Length: 377
Image (cartoon, rainbow, N blue to C red):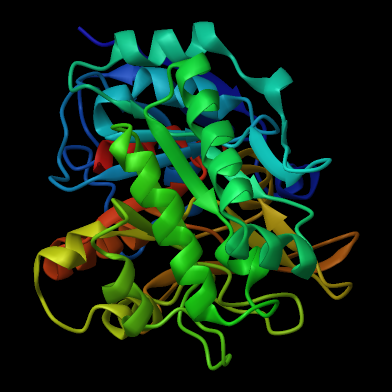
């Protein structure tokens, strides 16, 4: 039997004046999934989200989505470390956001973030998975100048040293590979074709060592150096997967949905217009954070901040059937808040899109979401 604890979440002071009632909040493992609890609906109420968001199905080993699911974990949202262990069987890959690689003196390279590596946690995640989960830390190419990039592209000795540094890092820490984030960091410095050649060289050598090579790529763009179908096809034989950043569509200067459904579909089809095996290499990005837009701009919010704002809401959230996202507006002593944040329904619509287009999924990031979201995967 699953266990569920119930606590009382007190409404905001302004709401208490209107009602003395409290919302009972379920937490932890329970016997019913979000589908059996009939929570995956287009018109969720604020009260139901507050009450149900902390309770998840006890059968955490059940995997609904057949494709790859990569979950990012960051040191600044520690809850993600627990999510990765509890729901390990939902994921094929876990990518802790720990590491940076920068040019050093001479032909050497410097690895930053080594102090964040948690080998005991890695072992706990592996032990929690019965499906052979892969640990693939993100490796950010940081502080690379045009001179550094041109030098490593043209200098064989430097290229060999770079790959040696990366492979040794994996071997010393029993990593299964890496998620390389470099396209957005270096694009514009040199021609995209040179970046593609560089990625192919790194990934081909890394994969010869039986290590996984995943590349972070930006969404569709009109930028001359955008990641296009041409580069996707060129790299597909050298790269295991592409983590596609299909989020951050809106911002405080242009408030709105974070990841509109039609835009996500366009981003996928722009680099892989044909339904074939290469599509499965795309890990469509899902944001597990939201945005709170205010008169002063506002910015990203994560689960507990969302729930705090949600307590000021009476009734149901507004659903936009075009973007397939939910939002609400509230006022407090800081002014008006326009809040967009994922719901069970909006996530499920994107899962269905990935099933239809036969892509995988990447989740940014596990510490930002609500615990009942993982019933969907």
